[in-house]
Every structure is written in C-alpha cells, then in structure tokens.
Length: 613
Image (cartoon, rainbow, N blue to C red; front, side, top):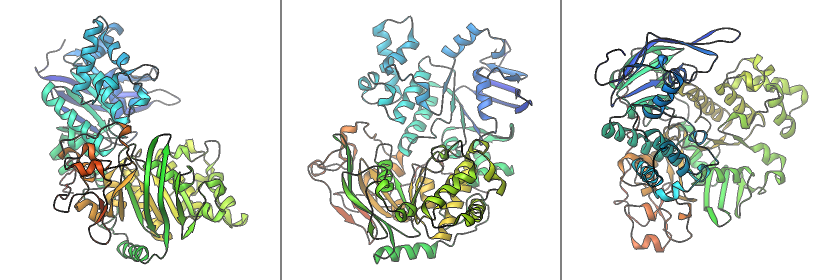
C-alpha cells in the first residue's frame, strides 16, 4: 500500500485504455487526476471523448476486449488492479458505488424497491434492514417512503427512480461514488433536487464524487474542479472558476459556446460561435404575432382538448394557437401531459373532447382519417431518431417514402429533392446510400429532421429533439431547425424539459401542470414574470423550499391543480378553479393571486456562468 495524503480518496496517474478489435483503439490516452475526500470532480466532454472508459476503469468494469495501463489506480491507498475478485466485490460493496444515466436499467423490474434495497443488507435482521432502508430513502428526500418501498420500479417516476438508485449507492457510506450522466433525462425540478442533494451529501457526509457528463450546467453546479476531455485526452483541467469562466483551450470554449447561455435567444445569434450572427427572426416574430392577433394564418389551433386514461385525467380544456413561422414551447415536468397533447395533435391519440384545426380547417381526430394534405402539413421529430428511422432501409429510401405518399413530387424529381434535403441538413451527399446504424446519433437526428421536412410540412412537433445529444451536436440541430423555419415559415411545437433550449428557441411558451395550462405568454414574459407559482418553481427550482407531490391522484376537477404544493395557497384555491388573468395582451396566468404576489421568477442558479470568452 502506497502512502497517500490523509484526505486523498482517488489517485489516477498515466491512465490509458485500449479496445481490441480488427484494430486496437486507444480510448483514453495518458490522463491523470485526483479526488480528495468530500470533493466533487467533474469529467466534461462529448460522446466518444473517453469519459465512460475512465469511469469503467475506476470501477474495474472494463469489458474483456479492453486493456488498461496506469502508473497509479489507487482508492484510499489500495491499488485496484491488485485486488482479487473477492476483494474487489468487498470494495464495491463498502467503498465504491456507481449511479448510472438510466436508473430504470439499474433496478430489477421484478422486485419491489424494499427488496432491492434490503438485499444489500445481508446479515442484518429484518427489522434493522427495514429501518435502514427507510432511513436511507428519507436521506435522499423520498416522500411517502412506505409507498415507495412497496412499489416496483415502473410505478415510480424517473426522478424517484434516480433517488432510489442514489440511496442504494449511499447505503454503505462509500468513500467514492461515480455518477455517469445522472441528470440527463430529468426535468428541471428533479434535476435541481438531485443537484441540491449531491451538494448536501458532499457537505454533510464528506462523500466524494466523480461526475461524468456532457452537461456544462451540471458540472458547474456540483463540482469544485473539472477536467475537459476530447479524443481520449484531458485538454484542460482546473477549478470550475478558471476552466468554465476563463477557458484557455479552444475545445473548451467551443463546448461552452455550444450550450445555450442564460437568457440567450435565437434573436441574439447562432449557437456555437463566438461572434454574434443573428437570425432574421425579429421580423418573423413580429409577423407571427400580427397573424395570430388578427386570426390570420394560424397554423395550428387546439380547442378545449381534454383526455383521460381510465379515471386519471391527463389533459383539461387545453386551448392554444400557433401562427405560421412561430415556435411555441411547451414546458412542464414528467406526467404533466406534454407528450399526450403532442400525440393528440399528431393524431396518434384520440382525445375525449376538443378539436385540432390546421390552418382554420378542423382535422380528423386520428391520423388514419386525416386527409393527405393534413398528414403532409403536420410532421413529428421524436427524441430518439431510432423511433423514426427504419434500421433496414437506406437513407435514400427513408427520405423518398414521405415524398411518394404525401406530396405531388414526381418520381423523376425525387432524387433532386433528396439531394436538396441532405444539403439543407448539412450532410454529405454520399450519406443517402448508408443505413442508419452507420451514422452517429447527431447525424441520425439530422436525417430524422430531413425526413420530417420531406413532406414539405407547415407544422412540426419537436418532442425533446436534442435531449440525448452532445452540446455541440445540439447546437448544430437547433441552428438547423431555425434555418429551416426561416426558409419555410414552419410552425414548431417544441416540447422540452431543457429550459435553456426553450428560452433560446421559443417565441411563446405554455406552462403545463397536471393537464392544465397554468400560464402562457411570450418567452420574455414567462422568463421575466410575474409568474404562476408553479412556473416559479420551474424557473428557479433551487430557490423554493417545496417539493411537488408525486401522487398522480392529485389531478382534480375542482380547485387549482397546484394548490397542494403552493406556498401562496388559500381556501379558495381548493374550492374553485382559478380564472385566467391577463397581464397584457399576450400574457395570461390561471391563479387567484394578483401581480404583486406573483413575484418575478429568478432564473435557476444551475449553470449561471459569467462567461468570459
């Protein structure tokens, strides 16, 4: 055992990782870093940078096709490479834990949470195991612990699953927890809770964290030091202040510029560039407002949309308009009804009540009964391009399909149109001969966008189109969507939990909570306030000492849907459904409180970095 400073938890020196195949690939190239007790150290980089290979090396979970070289790989002074299989299991049980990106894959779907948590407490009496399970879930702020313990993983929200996985990682009070993209798929409120929880555990328990992410905001909010990885090497390392506020390496600057900054919108410029190159969107935005106010050229209208699954009401009286050339952002946490509303608009889910109109003409409730013109006018881009692209078809066939079925383009013109589509999404012409699996995730998403535009739509539903993408790829896709909108005057319904993406893209925003639109206005009005109390909790989730109940039975027909969680609640809020109040011509809030009480929302402190680039 080598002597290490008393508070040193992990020391990695000259680490390289190789993967053997037809050729040997060096995934990690001679990197070194240390983590002290109670410290959070971030590895920041994009897919393929080698971050996950570093995590697998620390956890000693590299596959058999991989090999590792290092001068040092010490956990509390013990060389992890020298441990036997039995010793390594003991270290993982007591000293080293992991939390992964998708908590659902870490939990056994056939076992209750109680059984999965207590399974790690073998040798402990049943009563002691149950007490420890309750205590650890309470420590990670799980509400109604008894219900969660008796539940199966599929009965919990994504955020609750992540808290359970974190609780299981903390159970043995480990020296180090490795977290691999722990908040990527989580809503703003849940992300803020997890960030706050990690910081609290680090402060109170002196737990050390190795946090691996492509999310600049997450690293900024949780870590003291960061290393930026690119192509297997660390290109820059130092304190959060020095690296993220004053980056010295070009790759770090590009990575930060690719992420939407606080308050930055498409009217301010392109993403991923250091000089302002604005879209011609101010004129477009004013034109969209005029068209909507005059009732002219409203591309999409939802009138009194309501829907239930059994006794569970998921949408209640939704009314909204989107003008041609306008981006309408829809925000709200998981279970708020965003995806159900998108599916109803697309004709994939028949509503119980209400109507959808496309350019003034009511359309059929299901896509099978819609006219060819209406099917061509409205297209979708899903979160995962794998839901859109047939893995057995080449890109040429994928793009030709919508043209043949939904447009009047002749067969002779299809090849030329495909070439134009490929060019519009900035892909090389030879890509049309490839299968989807031959493309990266970002390239597949661009092809999915090209497919949506193949039918020359006037309305496109964008359901979390960039949430699974690296920040530089996200910047490329968002810039591309704005270019296509400017060229075609396309109306977008953008569904996202990423508030910075919404702020950058949206002209107007609707806030959905438990099936009701509680607030609607321009992007500036929503982000500057006054705001509905629920909107405040979304925009500055760490600033409010409250937690939204996970009880789905909270959907109700009478009173305000936010009453149980609102800090401004009164008896009237439970008894009567609040009326819509107007705060100017475009801003409405469904609340009994007045403007003075609905204080302006402050932006979330997550990722609020004073960039100096």
